[in-house]
Length: 212
Image (cartoon, rainbow, N blue to C red; front, side):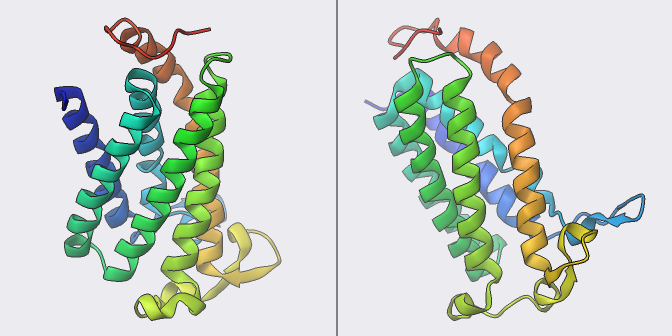
């Protein structure tokens, strides 16, 4: 039976992924000291961690089966809209990364859900983020994936890794490392709101688990 909460969760998930698909096309044009953030970050890094946040709360409230269904609904909606708002290659890369990253997140969360309250969301978000980042940036920018669409010339330019190291590599690799760093920090920062909202979620009838 479809509940209003299912629809809300799926809609929020789709909105987060679509927004991230668009924002990942825009490097952060700012300087921090001598560091040019455009070499290591895109704006999508600041919005996508919310997908894991929504997924984990949904999993906590409804359980893994419903969470997977909502992820699939969000996936279909996000890819459909992203084809219009982003390039086809970015849409495919984002869709594949989102789907596999979220499914990994749900699986790990479910295995750890009865341990200390912070372990499930933190571990699931960390490993999900690593998996998601690797898939997305590889499919979106790596030369071998050019069958998905043309490469971004700016992304392929050589630049110092993370904007400061003496080693140079394609700019998209620094974006991947920079985005992953932000996602991992977000996984830590979102623990506090997760804990606060978990108290509300677990107070609802039919909750799947109790906090440690």
